[in-house]
Image (cartoon, rainbow, N blue to C red; front, top):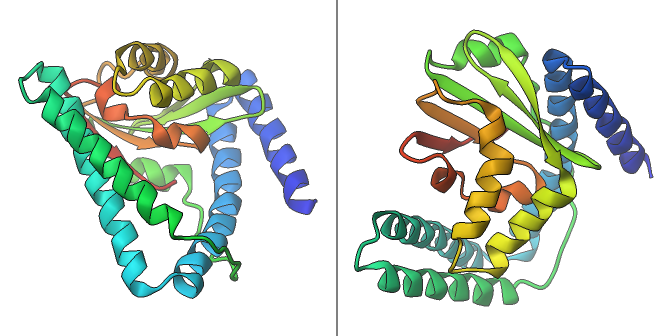
Amino acid sequence: LARRQRARIHDLAMRTAVAAGSAERFFVFLERSRAGGLAEALANRQAIREAMISEDLRREEDAAATAQAIARTRYLEARRRRSKGQRQAREGLRAARAKTREVHARIQRAGRAAALYAPIASLAEVRSRLKPHDALVLFAVLESEVAAAIVTRTGIRSARLGPRAAVDKACRDLVLNDPDEAPALDALGALLVKPLGLTKARRILISPDAMLHRVPFAALLGTRDVAYVAS
């Protein structure tokens, strides 16, 4: 109950800050909320992997996840180039996903462990670590909408990206319509990328949230460098 109450308070604080156009306050509340969520996730996930899953199976899970990520990148690149290898790349992605599902099917148990709390970096610290043409995008999936904080070396701004239901639907369409991802990618680009105003950024650092972890932002951002970072 206490966790749910804290989550509601952080959600309300972030919605209020972004509605008021206070990017700095939005950033602070977002980072505090993520620190709590990360602690809980680490407590659960690490306990499962360390206490409930054998070392061999952990290695197999890691290998399957890596292979799936590589296969997805190859497929998206082949489709972008409209190369003759699209079919082979698509089959490779399907095989990699099947392997991941097979490994996950063998993991049945769950557990808890003490949380590990990561320190929260200040906005000044985050900005100082960015290069002149970097843009860090921190997404926040709130109760009724999706928002983002865009941090650069020279400043910060916030953006309201639309109703949560619309973003959630676009994410589901991306999964359900595989391998024909073009319409879903276009919809996600309009919702999640266009409002960010990243025309001057050369490297985009993405910190996703909730269902946005499933979004292939590299496919949405064209030829620019894209990296995923922990908040």
